[in-house]
Length: 296
Image (tube, rainbow, N blue to C red; front, side):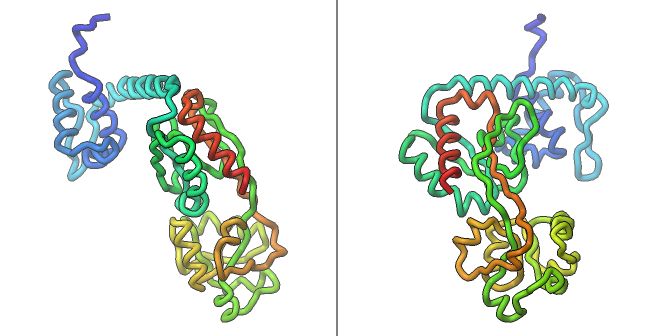
């Protein structure tokens, strides 16, 4: 190995890799929590060290040059190796202190997580909890989170998943809405009802069709990616929507609509990278979360 021939550092390599992946310096700077000028200097320093141009301006955006494309797979391999080193080092930590990042939807984080987080704080005050609320799946291999709470089992072999809770979702609406519009007796009665859409209604319409509900995009007059907002909109009397039964039971003023409809299964999985399962602090948080969900 010609060690003296390696003159660039990892920060420069990471700057190029993330900029190429994100498509712009501004997006890469946000991903790395750096300023855009700092990131730009790192990319420029790497270009100077390698003697090649890695990006070119195309309008207001950046495009990877052919030289950059030729090197990109090698830098991706470096990034994956760096992630593995970080995961293994974190996994070897035996201290029940430090930071643990939990990823969950905003509805789950707002309505179901607080009691579990209180228990974690009581038993391990040295752990700093960072909660990321998003409907998108966090990439655990890239350390976007240490633990993810998901409603689907992951199929990646490097991820460890545990089924911690199973419930069902049903249609609900506020009593005020049903007093005004009438309480449906058959699926056909919902053909002209107002629905609150969560995220993308087009994904929900086939599910509703499988339940015998004939609705279209026109039935969804309000849509949001926020589960907590959709719940509030339903409480306000703005339409019918799906909720897990535990969430509905803690929401005043809601009634189940057409209780005879088949329920929608809603499993809850805790997911972590296998390497991180050997970390005492991650294991502690993982186990307490699992216990909290089992008690729901």
